[in-house]
Length: 196
Image (cartoon, rainbow, N blue to C red):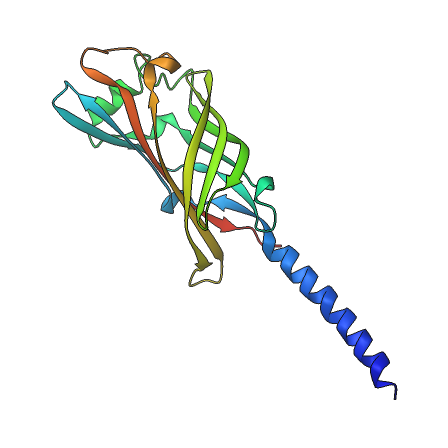
């Protein structure tokens, strides 16, 4: 038996196996898990306190290429009907044309254009934020919190980021004397890797 020949064949097969394994792990699409993701906002009220709210059940997906982060991408959206400040009367007002105008603009969305890795767990993500029919560029610093399998064997990974927008730049300029212009937003996204 020609052991050198057998060794070369084995090495070639192993090389293909490793390359295939790296590819399958390195580039993956994740679906946002709305139950374990959150969009939380904070705005100043009457100049004396901060009011908090959230928009429940964010949706979307993101693509991660571990070998080439420049290929990463992310699309996230929220249904404005699901604004929630723990007060029904206030939520109804927020859904009105004075604020989110949910009948005409039922969603807020972000779509990335550039995805740059800046550290072991940090990324600079640039894209377009669309709200009330107005699209503005937005750049955020996102932290990849962690990755791993859940108890059911699905692979998950998650990001978190904080940023500030001016609501008036998107045409939401009602009650500027009582509510701040700056809206501070925290987004935490957990994704489930799609099975191949």
